[in-house]
Amino acid sequence: MASAGIDEVRAWILERHPERESVESNENLIESRLVDSLSFVELVYAIESASGVEIDFEAIDIQDFQTLSAIEKAFFVTV
Image 1 (cartoon, rainbow, N blue to C red):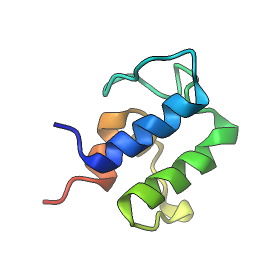
Image 2: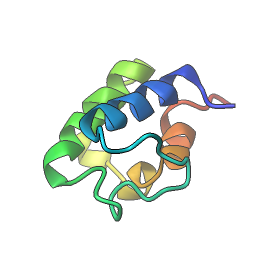
Image 3: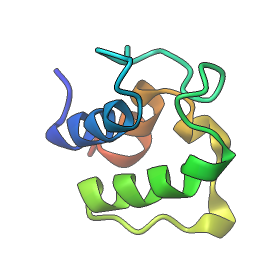
Image 4: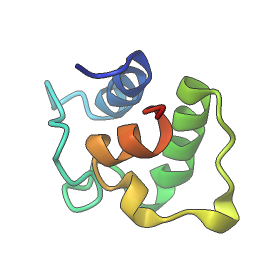
C-alpha cells in the first residue's frame, strides 16, 4: 500500500501529464520522460513538500528519483 506522500508525488506527475491516467510504481520516470531536467527540481520540491524532509541537492543520488518505488523507499518509508 502506497503512502499518502507518494500519492501526492504521483498526483504531481499526473498533473503535468494529462495524457496519462496512471504511473506505475516501477516505471522509470526519467526514461519515460515524465520527469526531465527542467522538471527535476520541481519534483524534488514536490517530494520535500509531501515528506516534510529537506533534500540536500549536494547529496542527491539519481537512483532515488528514477521510480515512484525508489522515491517512496528513499523519502517516505520509516524503518
